[in-house]
Image (cartoon, rainbow, N blue to C red; front, side, top):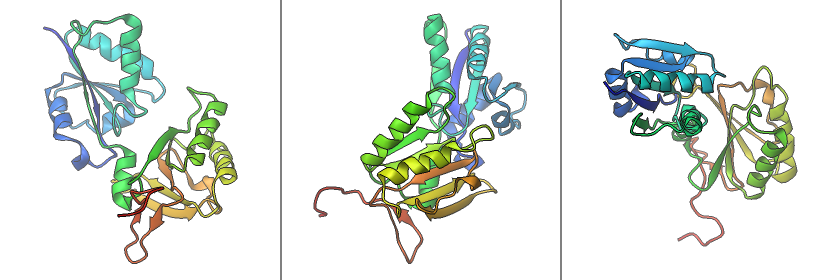
Length: 251
């Protein structure tokens, strides 16, 4: 029997935000592969073989899932959010590319998920209603100089900026350095939003300004959103949005 490989996103945390297509793929699978914390989110799937691994073992996890599928298993690889956004889809296709695996030998499907940024944006209102960019602040796979240059470019272009993986136990000072970079390129009243564990019981949202932003309260579970110069808060509702227009007259 020919196997298959489906790469799925579990969304930001709430079970109801997992798409029906992903739910169906999990039901139809024989084997589920993923970071141990994400495996825990689908452990109620009975009759499956689970293959948990550590967070930094992406390539090993990708190779293992491909090998299982080539053995005839119906494999689902789980990621949080969307599998194509700082997640497992890229790692799997990297292995497929290097090993020159044919799609005739290994059917692959990628099923999208709701990202932390999209969930946070919905929770806040519409902060990414105009142009925005998303930057992973981890320098495990890119140099710190490249990372800083991208932040500077985004700030000068007046994008709303979302930072994934902003701070960890091994990277305690980098977010503070990024704030210093932003302060040199943006006004001090630029809105900064911390969105923690959106859609879960631990959900928390905190708003401040660039001049007052403190990195010490940020963790790997925090999504940091830096507003553009036009991002604003509606006083009577608390909703935050970025106007759709810029550099043109409003109709």
